[in-house]
Length: 529
Image (cartoon, rainbow, N blue to C red; front, side, top):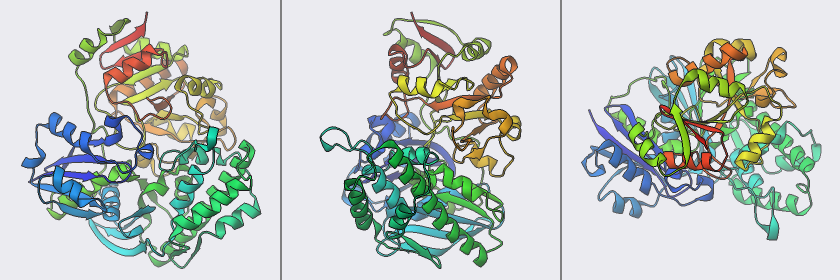
C-alpha cells in the first residue's frame, strides 16, 4: 500500500492531493488558500495547499512513497519544492483517469476530456471497460481546434469597464455567458463567424491552433460593436452555446456509430463546466448515463494523477462512486469558539427546527459544516442557503454578494423528490455534484422561481441523499415539513470575485458585513447583535 502526493501548478487552478492506500485523504485547491480565484491567478503553484495538507495530515511530502506532477509544468520549480525527483502524469490522462475511476460505471463506457490545452493535446478519448482504458483519439494542440478557446477568449473580450479594463476573465467567468444564452436568439451572421473559427468533420475539429484566430475574431467583433449592449451579448451567447452544442453532439453521434456499445460517458476538462451542454448530451437517446467529474476543470488534475498512480499500483482496479466530495479542511468547535470572541455576535446552539423556521421566514443562512468541498461547486459544506419561493431572491442575493450574474441560483433537493419536481431523467449520480441542467415540471415553475431560469425554465439541481450529506438532508427535510417544498436555494459561500470560503474567520466576516442574516457553523448559530 502507498502514500501518494500529487500536484498541479504553473497554470491556472493549482491544487494538491494526498491519497493513502488508494483512498482520497485530502484535496485542496490553491485558490482557497490564496483567496484569489484561479482565473485571476495564472502561473500559480500549489505552495500553500501542499503545506496545509502536510500540516493537517501529519504526513510530510518527503516521507511519501510517490510524488506525481501533472505536465506541462515548470520542472525546475517542482524539483526545488519537492526536494528531488518526481513522476510525471499527462494532463489529459489525469483528466480521464480522474473522471472514469470516480464514475462508478460498470461495463463499456467512454471517457472524454476537452479543454484549452494541456501538454500537447486539447482532447483525449478513451474506451473503458471493467477498469481498463484504451486511448482511441488524441486531439493535438497544434492542429485540433479547441471549442473551450472560443469560450475563454469570448469571455475575456466581452465586456470592458473604465479605461478599457476587462470586466471578465477566462477560466473564471464563462458561466456568465452560459447563464445569459437562454435570453438570446439565433443570428445567422454570428453563427457563420463562429464557423470561420472552428469546423467539425469525421472526428476532427479543424481550425487549430485556435487561440490566435479566436482572439483576433473576437477582438474584431468587440471593435465592431457586437457586444455593446446586454441584448447583443445575449444574442452572441445564444449562438456560441448553440454552435458548441451542434458541433460537439455531431462528434458524439459519430463516436456512437463507431462504438455503439459504449453508451455511458464520463467527461472532464473545462468544456464540461457548461451545464447546458451537459443537459443536451444527457438527452441524447442513445446515451445511457453521463458523469461529469466534480473537479472537471484543472483543479481536478492533481486527484486524477494520484488515481492513475493508484491504478498502476493495483490499489484502484475499477470505477467507484464518490460518497461525497468533502475532501478539504474542517475546524473544531473549540477553534471556532475562540475565534468568535473577536466579534460582537449573539450565539445559540444549533437547533434544526429553528434554522428551518428562519429559512421559511426568508432569512439568508450561511452554512459551514465539516470539511469543505472539492471541485467547482458549493455542495453543502460552505454554502449560502435560502428558501426558493421568492422571485426577488436573485436580485436580493446578487446585491448582498456583490454579484452581477445572470445564471440562476441552484436548488439542493431531497433525492426522493427529484422526479416530482424535475422531468425524470438519467445521470442522477452526476447531479449530486450540480453539473447538469434539467427541465422543471410546469407545476413547479411558479412555486420555486428563485432557482429556475426565467426563460427556458431549466434548473441546475444538486441531489442530496441521507448518506451524501446527512446534516443538510435533515435540514431540508425539516424545511419541507413546514413549507411542503423539498428543496432550498444553494449558492456558494463567497462574495463577488472571491473563491468559496475556507475558514471560520471568512464566515464570521461575511456575517459581520451583513452578507448573511445568520451563520450556522458546526454546532452553533451566530447573528449580529
